[in-house]
Image (cartoon, rainbow, N blue to C red; front, top):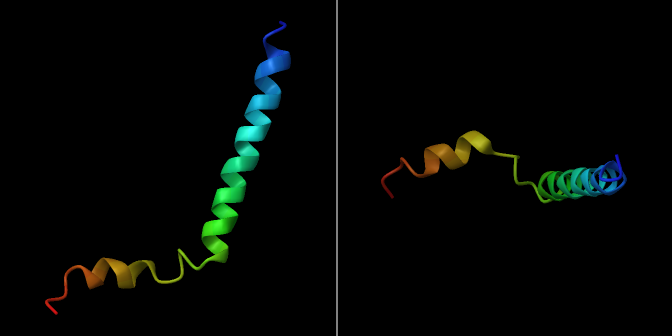
Length: 45
């Protein structure tokens, strides 16, 4: 039971880090043109 006092705050912090990373990626435009990047590698420039 004592381990829950350690694991619950760690899991909350981990979720906050994941959400912050996702927010950062969305804010920087990482997901703006998903299809374009997939087609870019197939083009023969």
